[in-house]
Image 1 (cartoon, one colour):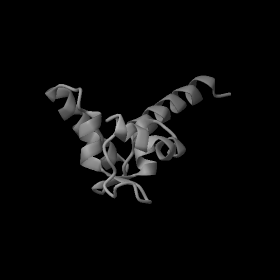
Image 2 (tube, rainbow, N blue to C red):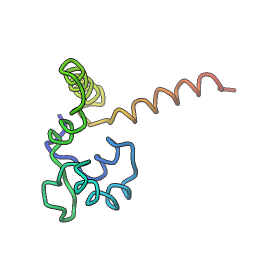
Image 3 (tube, rainbow, N blue to C red):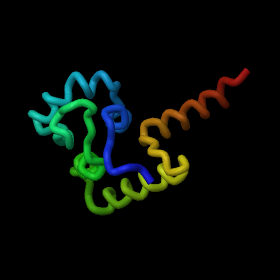
Image 4 (cartoon, rainbow, N blue to C red):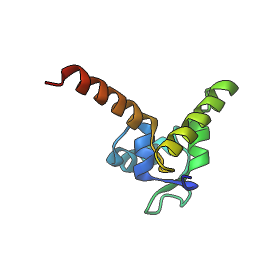
Length: 105
């Protein structure tokens, strides 16, 4: 089961951004209310509440979509051997397998 916090690296994966993007922009994003405040107030290493980040990411979804997103995250973590795998990584793997099969020599 994934831990209760997300590191800057894990948050970057969730957002589909680079780690440097998170470090360079987190203060501005928090100020603009586009990202929750880190648990440690911005002292290195940066960490966020996993539950708070997921609630923030899912804020615009209706109840059924939120439940589906939670189920998807749980299934992805279980499929990865209880290792957290962001959705972007899974999608990239699917496309890579498709392209490998289509263009294999």
